[in-house]
Picture 1 (cartoon, one colour):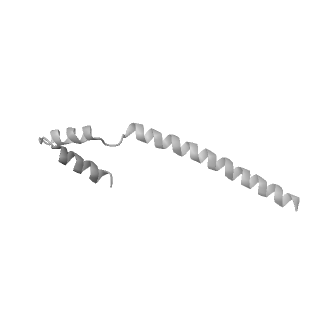
Picture 2 (cartoon, rainbow, N blue to C red):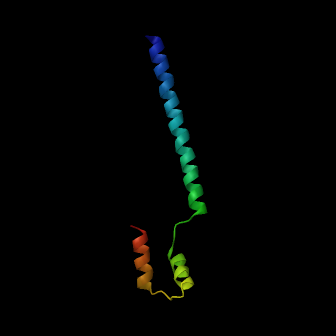
Picture 3 (cartoon, helix red, strand yellow):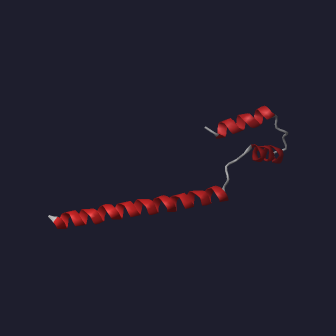
Length: 70
C-alpha cells in the first residue's frame, strides 16, 4: 500500500512541476509575441488612413478603434 502512495506522490509532484514550467514558458512566449507584434493604437490607424490617401477624422479613428476592440 505504501508503494501506491509513493507513486501517487511522485505523480502529483511531477504534475505540479509541469504546471509551473508550462506557466512560465507560456508567459515568456506571450510577452515575446507582444513585443514583436504590438497591439494597434490610434497612431497606427492614422498612418494607415494616410497611406490610403485619406485624412481621417477623430470620429473615424474612434470607430476603427472600437471595432478592433470587439
